[in-house]
Length: 363
Image (cartoon, rainbow, N blue to C red):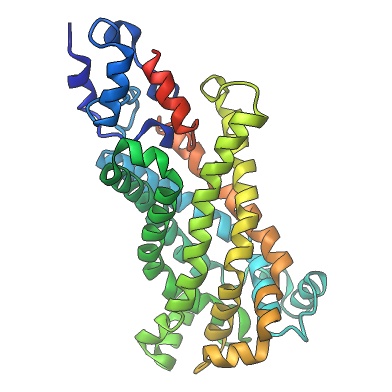
């Protein structure tokens, strides 16, 4: 009889609670019971000698192909959703820069339609799509990498005990790197959207921006961008993982492994939308700073604080951004998980670590 431990060593897995898969949550009774008792299984789990086997998937878990698939899923989910909400983002940016002209959400849309027509609502779509596609690939792919890495460093016991810290550390590490690719596109996007006549889009806006402020000028908003994106992403991933765990524990009567894929994707969207509301509130002050700094040449943080005020920094454009980010985040998670399902991977989220360990020990 094949040693189940040798089979499990083929799979480099993080603790099973970090992912949802019926086969990743259970092990064969025939394989485990003849070899070790349930108490030995528990001890072996804590010493990292036993891990839950991965299901027979089209993409091997935690292989290079796995991270590539997660990157593609992140690229699609982030790029497409940001592209779809370009009109909302356009109004939001103009409300932040010129609150006298763009007094409210409805009047803001009215002003844009009157001055620029329907096409004007998608102004800046190219830098938005390119920037967030690249950023999304890095964010989701690197999050999966860092989540596994930090879990391996911590070990199974501490990874389960401090799972939220692992979510936070993994997402922060991924976002810091991903934003290096996003920053230049964000600078061009804001300038195109908020300065009439500056440029039509990415192809003429990027060289014009570089000519005006130099290549380093594209990274003028790097620190405020980190200030917006890193807290946002930490909240996005940690709250999503927590909310979806609570959803399956308290709101869904059927165990997740028995739920249909469409139902799982629906839960992903709902959990993502709720997480997005928290994300918007946490990251909004920095979002106002990014818009202000990228709008005008030579703008400083001090000038932004003086013009916006502390209250304005936290509230200007917030209701619209809550709608935008909630929709964005919910859409991103459902697209991301749908792509994972398409390539044969489990959807994101799982039961509490204690429940996972008990289920394995009793198998």
